Length: 152
Image 1 (cartoon, rainbow, N blue to C red):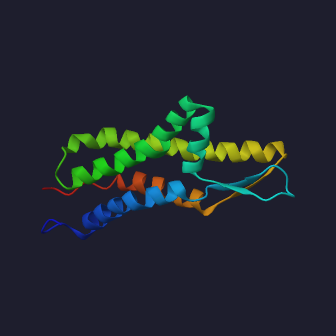
Image 2: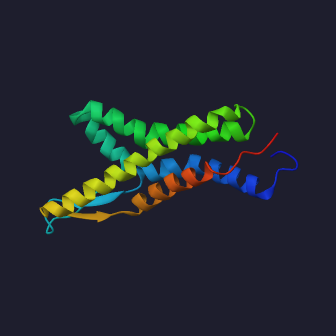
Image 3: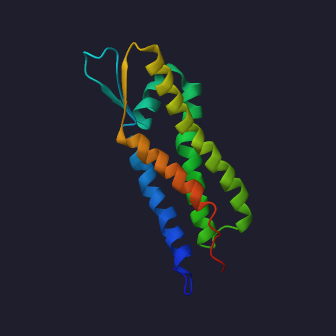
């Protein structure tokens, strides 16, 4: 850490770095549990398992989901860490903020799928703890993008 860095800036920098660990955990955590009928058991679905299924059935959609759910948030967090460490120019902050908005798209899609599936009423869907973790990571990343980087 740089000498003289204020406590809020240091806390924001550590919080951003923690997202490099929390995002991969969220990607493998169960976003939801789904089953065809209420009688049968529920299968847990995560970002990783969903991508694995999509690669086999619709590679183009799998690529789009991978960009929104994995590449955009990871690039944003890593880019912000580089700016905070003085390894990248502060002009990167604008494009990194745009990446954060792309990362929020996957939360919207998951919510939309849950609403549609529950509306049809054929199966049963329960949200998993991973959905809350992923949403928290995306919102934390978005909030941290409003904290000014340390001056160096």
